[in-house]
Image (cartoon, rainbow over all chains, first blue to last red; front, side, top):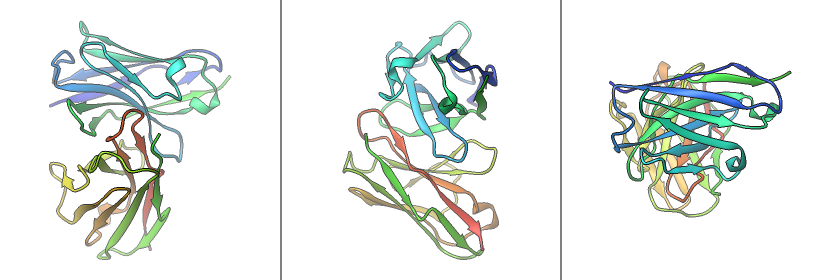
Length: 120
Length: 109
């Protein structure tokens, strides 16, 4: 059974870099069957798509975050990662990793989410 | 970017009632690429509907989706106690960024 689990610091200082990892179990991220994505949800608000990556390394990013975001794969550990630079309080949110199937499909499996607070 | 506007913001209903949730897109896009999610406190969103009207695996048939163009609807035919939650629509039909609505909370009256 496919499972996703986020990990990383729960507190990041303003202007620093937020780094999160998603560990995938139950399927190889190299399979080519899925896209792997990051979605965040500020407290009390709707989700916001951050970006996604395919096993080839092809990425898509939300234009509103593109200048600050990097998503990468580590096939040796079956993980993918998110880096968000120059964070501010507006980046405080629950961050989810998720997967969607190849083709035009919605995200159908999500990790439990991890709260990241930006504060000094 | 396609903006999704959900209405109402809050729906106050009783178990057994019918719930009708609306999602309107700021522009028309690839038809049918709308999904609906249910989210309970402290949990990740759960996919209910994809392709505007196809129920995900394990989703009860009291949940149904409809719509086209820019107007989409999620209907819960008879509310069960476990259905009180926040619901989000999500479009994945246009080029990135894929977007979500701001949510409709279905609360117990």
